[in-house]
Image 1 (cartoon, helix red, strand yellow):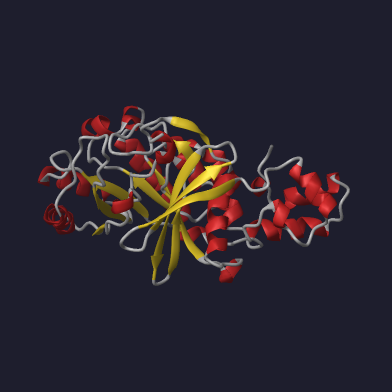
Image 2: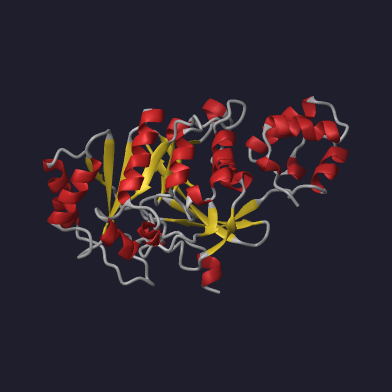
Length: 346
């Protein structure tokens, strides 16, 4: 079985033609898809067409099986995929709208020492339509429609998985979610986070997509980075920086560097000075994240006072920096805490 949400309008037009249906049916199906409807609930297409589609595609590729709400109002969803796998996502509400954090893989193979998503390794990649369906189902749940009437205004690809390790599906998702005829979320309101798969940073720069590139850096030098991020054994920080500068030159978008502060590991004055030296030279921003602790790891977070001190050291060197507000850590929904927890607890 396939995922109909993988298909663009043009691909749907080819499909209905192959099925012997009128061309306008493709637009009807496309609109229903982007409204978050299952095939069986599409009320404006014939029973016979629905039956044809249901022999080829899942009725809907995922369902929300649990919802947890944090004391700060953030919501974490567990989605059950059609094959039984579980992924998680987080809905954050702000004055300007709703931001949804989506997953791109079931698990992750990057092995970062501070992250829960990688504890059980990688089960599989998500298709473009499975990534999109996370947005569509939550948008529908919130009463959102299409275009300007959508409820989801921003998307961050920071759930479980490494987006650039699932490159083709992620890029197709970006095109589907930003398509004018669909839910139409501007690429400028979408952030793609990567631990630094250098060749695919170059490829993404050449796609013509204006997404925000976020680099999970977490250390100011290669030796330290290798102790917490296995990807550092393949790509150096110098290679990552060269690729991010290329990304900026091609897109004009400022690059964001994520830096999880781990007490006694990467929060020294020397680390701050090294980090400041790395990010100078083109428009960047450093987002400091007091480590969100994972039960299975022995890494510890910093106090707010230590986070503020590190930020001040960077500011003194002229670095644009903020400390990310910790949200949803009481429901394991903070950055680095998403995982396939329903299955891993069974």
